[in-house]
Structures are given as structure tokens and as C-alpha cells.
Image 1 (spheres, one colour):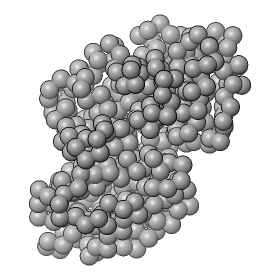
Image 2 (cartoon, rainbow, N blue to C red):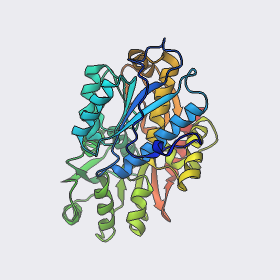
Image 3 (cartoon, helix red, strand yellow):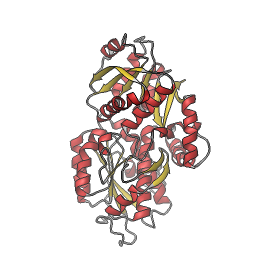
Length: 400
């Protein structure tokens, strides 16, 4: 997502944007007013292009806002954006290219499989990596140079289980994509945490990203005693599963995760989405939040986004914008040297459209289950449940 300012050329809007910047080496703070060079790897083509395209809009928006306000200590941010084509090998190729350009840090792909491929390189080269992918493995255990922006999969699992406990849902079926690192981590998180919340997974149904017929999943869940079906999905499978679920007549509600928290899922699913429960980042339900720092942080992004694109910023937009804001705050605090950026990130507390981050030496994910909203689709919109409204009010109050 991006908010374009008048001085930018059309080239800045292209999906394969590559800005050639004067290198700052590893971010030498002594280099006066030269630009601060950062890299951005994102899925701008391939299966994750709709998701990555939304993140790009707000990465650009955040950079333009920062530069329009004078930059960071008088130095502008300049971004090299490279398309990973929803392919891990392309992510690796692009990371090595950015390394050779001596970027101060890299913001990286919405696609978890790309993030997992790039993360070991970031650690080896000691380049701060701000990941827009939610896979737990990037930060569990903690890696020194890798920080995750979206709530990780296990946080979504925890938030889901908290909702189930509060609503006396004790038996669930779970469908998960075996080819998606995000889905697998989410399912693993549910397995690990379910007992703590008095929930039993009575049926686990694996499927692959290429699946087009989910009737076997529904058949196996039917008669299992499940009180709900949880679907861990990203992209096309999430749409297909929800549309087919509407006619399956299982008689239990369908719960989906943050990957479906956008018009990219709502619009193609159409009427079949009505009544489905969908988790989201807190920023997606801005209208349900009380006034305060959190709502203000969301509005600084959502207002310009709506004005340019004509719709509310989706889940992936929140992540892109937040990634830039976290990185900028770290540079403001510690300077442009890579190790100083890393150290600043690890001690950073910041209110963003995704919630209030508190990174530490033992936590490079920063968000909590309370930064996630449980919504239900009503008249084509994501509406927080009464339970979540109460939780979100507390979260907003904590942000100030």
C-alpha cells in the first residue's frame, strides 16, 4: 500500500520498482544527507500477487509520508522493490542482489515460504530483516536479525482458542494446507495450545494448495462431533473452501484466519461469506475502536489509502505500512548501521496500525493474541463479535 505524493514519478508506482540509490554501505551514520537505502522483496506476481500488491501499496505510502515530512534526521528513504514471483528461490536471488547493493535493511515477503528461505541469509549476512510473513519458524526460536510484523500463526491459533473457550466450543475440526508454512504453523499452534483452553481437535484434515474440491474434508468432519470447522488457508484455497462450505450443510460455523481478512476474499466468496467468522489484525476493524493512539496510527494510513484506492485497507496493507514504520523508528533511534538497527528493533515499543509492538531479546514477533480481532461477516463486511469488541477496547486503552 502506498500514499503517493505529487513529486513521485509514475515509475514509483510500478509493481517491479527498482530505484537505484546512492549506497550508504552498511548504513554509515557519517554519510551526511545521502539517502538511506532499504530493500523490499514481495510477491508481485504468482499466486500471492493480490496479497503482496496490497502490501506494496502501503510500503510505498509509508515511505512517501516519511520522506514528505523531511525523512529521518534529514535523510530520505529510498527503496529497491523486487518481485519474488511467489517463489522462494526468487526471494533468495533478490536478497543476494540487495546485499550487494549494501542496503541497511530488508523488508520481506508476505509469502511465508519466501520468508523462511530468506531468513537464514539475513542471519548469515547480519542484515536486519523485517518479515511480512507470519510463519512461527522465523522467530521461534528467536533469530538475531529477523523480526516479524504480522501476528505469527501461533498467535492467531491462541486468539482462536481463547474465543472458543469463552463460547463453550470444546470440539473442533481443522483443515490445513500442507504446502503452506503459515497454515502448518497455525495448525501446529492449535495442536500445542488446544488443551490449555479445553479444546479438542476431533478431526484434522490436510489438503494441498492446489485443492479444488473440499467435499472430502466436509464429509470427514460431518459426524465427528465437531462444533466448528477451522480452516487454515491462504489465497485461492480459502475462497474455494468457503464457497463450497456454504452448500455442505454441516450445521456448524466456519472459522477462518487473518489471510481472509480482505476484499480479496470477501468479494469472490460473495454471499457464501455471510456468517463466516474471520480473524483479522486490529487495524482492519478501525471503526470499532475508541479514540486514542491506536486509532490515530491506523487513520494515518487508512485515510490516505481510502482516498487513493477507494476501499478500506486490508490485512496485508496493515503489515506493509507497519513494517516501514517499525524500521524507520529503529533507524531514528539507533542510526543506519545494521547492528544499530537490529539493537534498536530489539528494544522498540511502537504503536502501529497492527497494534502496539514490544520487541525484546526473547520476542521478535512483538504482538499478542489480544491484537487480533474475531469478526463475523455481516452484509459483506467484517464486524467484530461482541466478545472481541470488549477485548479490543482494552487493547486500545493499553496503547494509550
